[in-house]
Image (cartoon, rainbow, N blue to C red; front, side, top):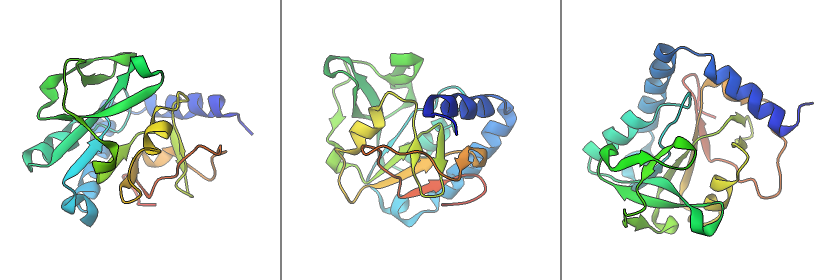
Length: 188
């Protein structure tokens, strides 16, 4: 059995080996499946990670929701608070610049923070997910801590490529499962 760090490396390596065309094609299918969820259609405030590297590409998802007039938040790492992040409302991807780890995020001068308990749907990245909807993140715990702050009514959606789904992920007490996981092949 692999430990979590070995598993992270393995699944990131799998993801890094897909072609750009395949990544975008699969991401488009995932986005279309996401748009069809009733709770997403009804949601007023959505939070979505801004994709980086070989993650499921979310830029088009964010643009679509913005064009529909939805309130969209993206994460920003808060250095003063240790390993924490906050939700920041944006009106365009042009408002973002490389931040912590090179991931696009709102600038520190951007003041439109949104209380986590106002978010209706949150789209969460991961290295891998399992059939029980558990998530293996990147190991820093940003999402685990943030998910502790959201409302019980907020839908937690993991998005991943189907090869990122494994039978079972070793979980810790602080790990929070997703409500649904969407891949290009299935919803779990």
